[in-house]
Length: 230
Image (tube, rainbow, N blue to C red; front, side):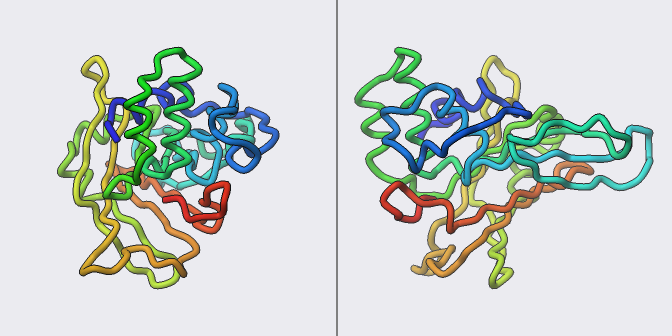
């Protein structure tokens, strides 16, 4: 899966909140029948996409940063309290459902390359790929790819085992950092890194003073025929 391909549709719908979604298209019908809004639902507010708000006070040196995971159905609050410092969309980009969303977006836009689509959907990438988009990517620019690689990990909820990435790629359309792709191994010493019995995985990445945390429920990350989709 090419970084450029994986980033396009997500960039178009980056971090929209307050949207009211209806059905779950990844369950209800083949990807070839998804509408544009259903594609947006998949890449924004599905088991493979977690919207994170980093909260904190706005004054210099005031307080610690808190983390909050919200759904795309949750409107922003105007009440007093910690302010949103940044928003990040963390996606499990290697999943077939997410790759289908990329292909369907290209179809709807009339720019699909059938051969490329066939290759994109033929087999799962050799790594688990997670991507991060954000309203403020300055922190990633400061620590660069190697710093991001050192700052990111997956944690299995049952065993607390941590999985560190093999590689990080920055996606810079027009020269500006828009999306970060983090590659995690699928196997270690011939065994699956994420066993079939695992229910939840947490993604962590500390960027400056912001701790980006996202929880993925693997029980919900399945294809229409019930197979695990990572």
